[in-house]
Length: 625
Image: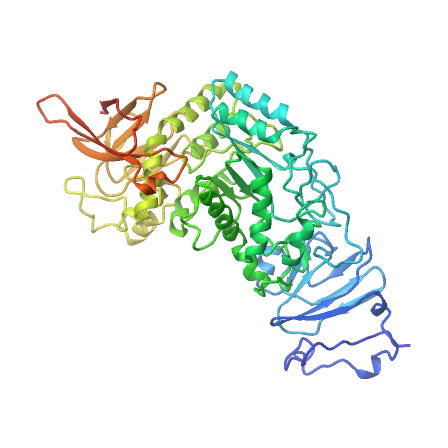
């Protein structure tokens, strides 16, 4: 008996894998006349837009091999759930040269897809909502065998046992070390179920969530909640949401189509009822990483393609939450792991799971070009020196975030540098009036608060004539291009530039934009490209000549640090909580100074209040250098 079966989907391609080999085709005499034994186990076909979809049954524990030459692993099931039979894809996956669309099973059969087009294989990692035997829904907060990969070879386990008492103890520990935090972020364990999510408080850990949030607010601490948007069957909104969800699950949870108003309203109604007083959200796992999200051929009730939904999922969620907070007259500031065009005006910071210091620093320079606020989160370090450098970079980003829920890291975990970490955090707090004004300019003028130097100086060369500031025409054009492509420095606001040290560095090269710049600490005047060294406790910072950097003192007064001979700037202030500024309720504080050659420095403060009483009334001017 021949044991070969053939199934045709649509019209055969004029060029298939076999036809490409001198016109070879499958010998009809080799085909079996009987029914395919796998058919009884539910082989399915489907047309989704321009794609044909073939579903082949897979038994629990079944091992699969093949899909082209591999330089990494023998098995292809579960461990690498989405494989593209494509030469290009192989460059990043270790699967190169022979992307053969054929795999075999240890159950005794093989599958060959005869197409010369790129074929995507999801090897047992995507689960349909209508699956007959779906994997069990697990709670990441309670089930030790939870994994992001369903039926996967590799297991990621996270033990989460924190509760309300642990959260309060965490705040108390920061206070004992003299550190003030503004936002307490609760990661997956606050929910009764996570991965997929219920969005409901775990009452065993938080008996009275509303009171807990109120208590935190009383201490000046806002509460931020972690979520991903894949809905658990045990969530009370699950049944209501199901008609507005896609054809595939993620971690056993339904995937809402948030392009639909009905889906948005169901989720937001539950959030308004259950999350009273919460200030914002950390929206995770929406970054389009299809190793664990839905496949390209998934269906969504809006009719939009699976890839389009995936590409805008993070941006759509930002808009959804922002609009809801705005409708209630409250501002929010949150985190998200995916964004896209059109989200630049939304108050969310982008983050991800990479942890390369160099990549984090490059992200600070490049984010301004795509309208993103990029946050290099702090999780761990291999040394005290690296720990300091990570805090220094984080302190000069849109949000200083310590994300140590998985390992319990604390700012003081390296006692020998605890004072440096504390000073770094205090510098961040001191810079808040300056940073807030930079965000105001982002809102009103579209100038990114964090951006690459070349954005302000398109002719950036690092080679200036010391007497006139004119470009040095003798510069090597390749060196000029390299200077324009500097990615390890970034501008902050209108007058400040940071050039953070990487772990292991004691000095570095700094390319200054045109004009005179000053060392933030000493006031020394600098031009062009400089070799800069500083001790561990300092961050290389430079101020444009004429710049004024206001620092907020602990007593609420401002110390206006002045660089150069004369300059002025305008600070912005409002209530920071509502949208009253749109009704004209804000204040502008003009600061000006001059240092005549043979007389005492002169300074001036001019406050223009628009129905708002600013706290920035006492200003001390400090000439630097």
